[in-house]
Length: 242
Ligand SMILES: NC(=O)c1ccc[n+]([C@@H]2O[C@H](COP(=O)([O-])OP(=O)(O)OC[C@H]3O[C@@H](n4cnc5c(N)ncnc54)[C@H](OP(=O)(O)O)[C@@H]3O)[C@@H](O)[C@H]2O)c1
Image 1 (tube, protein in one colour):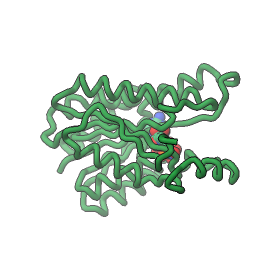
Image 2: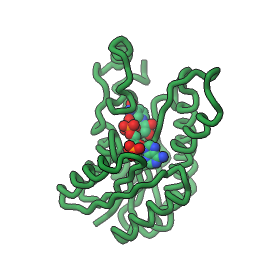
Image 3: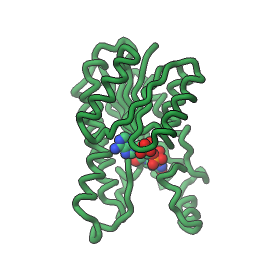
């Protein structure tokens, strides 16, 4: 059975991606950083689809831990066919109050992790016969910027450059794409006041927030779309066109 590694799949969008790959017949390496119990719950949901799951605690911003994640997946499944670099963190702070260490941490978790895990998985991906792919989870803020989270927006912009660079580096064997979600209801976005929510919703033409399966659908498309590489799929309810 083909196998995938989904970073940051203990919660939110990563969880939905893990369950979508399982429903599509893929074994899944469920990765977490702090939410061990939640990751075990995701693994049980994955196994309900009749595929295998392995749970790996690893801070993927650390190259050695990223190596260990990929090694664990390779040992469990005999190979890795797809990687989804989804792990990410956010912080709301204007530049004047932003500590350089916070800027570095966001870049480490949101960008360096994708480099680390992709590099670790390269040998396995090159051996895959399942049209191997890497999908990086960016953000609408890569395009728009964001005054209160310049480091987060910068990290997501860097992911798009990494995506195009890796797409040409790894062609023709491995396709590399990005998905750029708009506002999706997860723990990351549950700090909004009712007024902020009204403002955000008014800017989304389809009139609702995204849900994690909306993003999982896009990742599954990119996994299967063998004529698509180096692209960014924007999934935002029309918000980017406004
Ligand atoms: N929600 C949105 O509106 C939105 C919009 C655009 C893009 N995105 C992007 O989508 C991705 C998922 O976001 P989400 O909303 O699902 O966030 P979330 O609910 O906060 O979940 C974040 C996930 O990332 C994991 N993680 C964080 N740091 C990690 C690290 N160092 N190593 C390994 N895993 C780590 C967390 O694991 P633990 O729980 O184990 O710590 C968790 O599973 C992120 O890259 C985010 O930037 C989200």
